[in-house]
Amino acid sequence: MRSHQFNQLIASMAPTTNQPSKMLYRIMRKPCPSPFFELQVKTILARISLRYFQVIPPPHLMRGLEFYISATLIAEKLPPRNNCVVLLLEKLTDLLALASDDQPMLYKKRKSLALMFDGISIQSEMNLDDPDDLVLAYTQSMMGFLLFKPNPQSIGMIGLGGGSLAKFCYRHLPQSVISVAEIDRKVIDLRDQFFVPRDDERFNVACVDGAEFVRGAHGEFDVLLVDGFDNDGQPAQLCSHRFYQDCHQALAPDGLMVVNLLGGDLWQTEIYVDRMRSSFGDSVITINALDSLNMIAFAAKGDAMKLDRDILQKRMLQLTTLHPLILRATAQRILAEQRAINLRQ
Image (cartoon, rainbow, N blue to C red; front, side):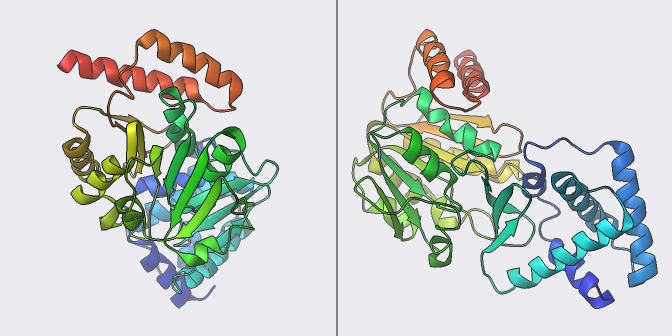
């Protein structure tokens, strides 16, 4: 890798190093590197920078690069050696070059296939041995809606990505009709790579803006899953007052909306949650996603979340038997948040 390529790599990382939630996708469900491991990576990067590129990145960029390299070495089960670090830097440079063309990218590891947009953050990840498995922990947290709506007849989804949530619901909720809105045709064209089901009488993927998708729906969905992102995070049209009002309108009586929020910017996240409350009132609960900085918001129309604690615990036990999810932890977080809300009232 030449010096100017390395400089471009560092410059390209600048917008994302202040968003640790994106970087944490790289080690989702992976052990954190030990201090000694991180020290080895830091030493190698400093040596490479001086010997090969005649430059040491600014401290905040170097920290982001160290985190990325350490996490990727762990994910790929590679040792913290000079040749491995150079190999990952070369691969990252290639990914960033592709990202400059604004094309979705496939990143294949030993046992998984990931969808990326910017060469750094993983948007979706598939277990090659079990394509319907939910690899990223935030998707498991979003499935917490089953505690409140265990048998939804109609599910709407905004954002297809690699189809993790769509595939899981299609497989495990055979009574549900699933409608997915994905704005990017290039993402939809990758559906076969991720084994997303073909359209049929109970599954459909439409190339449409999620905001338009809900604007045209009236009392249609028992559950609405919002997981739409672009390179800059959450698109403005998917987190506006108007959007959440349209989502409320699109839900059936006692319907439930679930939203994946990036938790790196807590101030901005609170703004989005306040907008939800302007449409859903006090029936909004937020929990931290399992093993990540993402925040998951549950917003109910009607009394969907006003269930007795004993009922929720009974459902939790049933669902952990029926579905291979970590629903117990999600349920415990939801119950804890409900208790906190009750104490504040």
